Length: 457
Image 1 (cartoon, helix red, strand yellow):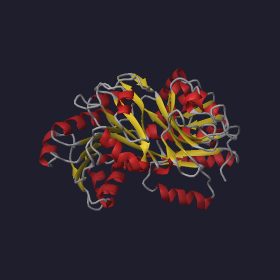
Image 2 (tube, one colour; image 1 turned 90 degrees about the vertical axis):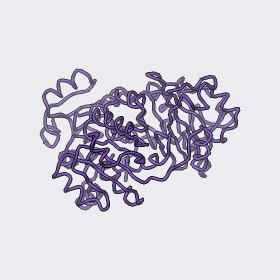
Image 3 (tube, one colour; image 1 turned 120 degrees about the vertical axis):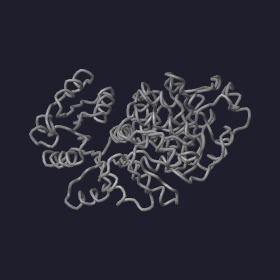
Image 4 (tube, helix red, strand yellow; image 1 turned 180 degrees about the vertical axis):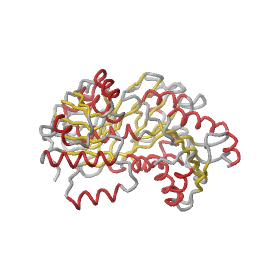
């Protein structure tokens, strides 16, 4: 596929790197001279210097021959203008835009009203807010990810020294009678990623991911030795970004007491006009004296959402020392993610990585329904609809999947959910959730190649 990416920032870079590795013909438009030089060194892609909002630049980059235009600059206005110019230059090009404004729904409506067809609008902040709320009240759980419209759940946890599962093999755990439809699908151990088998041993410090049916989630969490859900009472939020506002609004609706810390006075006034019951504090939320004065001790959660990964990590560690119970940090640099978990930060979120996942989901061949990337793009969860292939119609124990890939769950067309063992089989039309190392993705997807992608109606 010929793909034109408007914007060579982190989202554009990560997207271009993945798509070029998967064999697509990629061109990146970037305005900054130094950034262009860097992209030319690290990407197997054509780099065009210029503004993505300029029709001349887009023509130079090949918009008339492009099949897909991905607009991921740091400016919503530029992304919308690039989509408008792309539509004017090529009636057939598919368009994806990443927006950050809190007025995203209004822009969806306006684009439809004026006839600007954007095939996919990504608003990572609002979508991440919903994902984050699922874990705030669940001690010991780092993430809960939905598949199949919420019928399948994947949750992450860290194996503690005191955990009863530490030192046991997966086969031993299986003999101890866990809820039937559950499976440990991935183990992250230091720099190593393991797609596990029965002989693998769980060690203290391992970050593991377990898949189960939604109906069995609480029982599986309990089986793993984690405490039950707790009531959210007080939440501290550091930083006045869009993600902070979306989360604060959601917490307000739940009746949670929220304090939001922002250093910029003008930004504080704007946030205070948007939020209802949240207390907006014009102060440095990383300052120990301020946190003590505002009574961070025993806060249900501390969410660090500034623009700086380092500040978010350090602030989270300070909040933990002062007594906050659940720690969440915004971390966009992929190489920081393993370190954040090793330091005891329970949950990390990355709007940039989420946007890349949504783009990959849209671009990937076959009927791919969702893509979730883990850590430094080392592993993925791929939800797809199975087409007729050499893997369908056979018992799983008889199928040789690529090394580094396992089936986590199967959802039948009638809605039945199974976390399969060897006797189950994949049938054409089933929704299948795979867990796989990144290097195995192309081979796995080509095996489940469905009908060619059609332009959405």
